[in-house]
Length: 89
Image 1 (cartoon, rainbow, N blue to C red):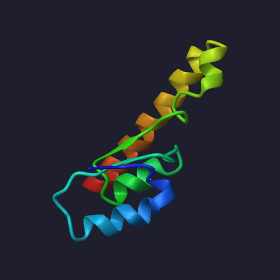
Image 2 (image 1 turned 180 degrees about the horizontal axis):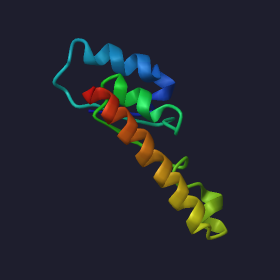
Image 3 (image 1 turned 90 degrees about the vertical axis):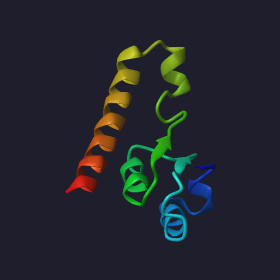
């Protein structure tokens, strides 16, 4: 189930609240997810997160900043990997 816009309807707390009665329902949190909150959504029980303009800022596209976009993607991958590793510990 995709929750959008997740941040505006309660964010991490909302995902956690939904997982209590629906533990087997996969949840994708999207809308307002950023580098600081991606791992928190996963730790709260989201199966995945959807990232929009925070991953690929329009300005980065306009000025063709491929390195910037690549660095942002690397940071998200690191945040997700860190959250997944913590989940397994």
